[in-house]
Length: 223
Image (cartoon, rainbow, N blue to C red; front, side, top):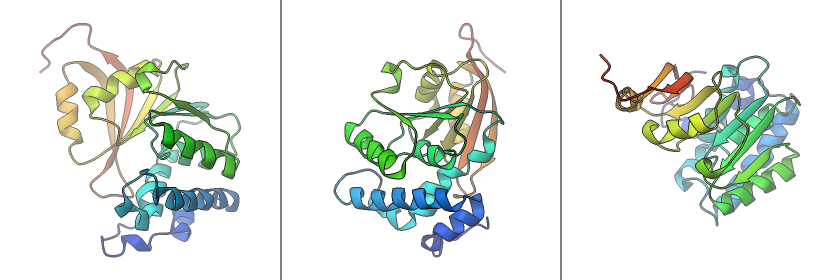
């Protein structure tokens, strides 16, 4: 997808999304229902910043969907931490709904956002598990994929990733331009492999792909 300037960002819509993701007609129908519900609910419930609504197909839906190609073949379990209004978790659940072997779980601490997610799941016919509570207090089996978007800095996020992971888990973390600073701050506490995938929706953003996450056995000074 070609980068868009701020001036034409609001022109990004369903046609662009379908072109850039290859989503089929049923998926687009479900996502359109989701988008309409987000606009309606956001008028009276704080789900996302109102300033992002005119650009929601790029800013929220495509931003979330761009991590689908990063999922390993055969993925069966995805846990989304701090789902908020469903980004990226609900978008992934809708995009992957034709792959019935995949189980998507959304963890969200705000009850009103959970109610919104439940209504979206019902209206779109999406099979997704929604759990109300803080990620550190939710006990779920470890997932093959853990996602998080705009949740917390890495020093606070990695312990949550660890809690919901196994040794082979891949974490897809949506980060902004200060990601390298965050990586530096956790360097002495955590060992992992990190790939920075440039965002296709925001030239200043990246998807941080984390594998092999583990704590260093004891505090050490790394070169």
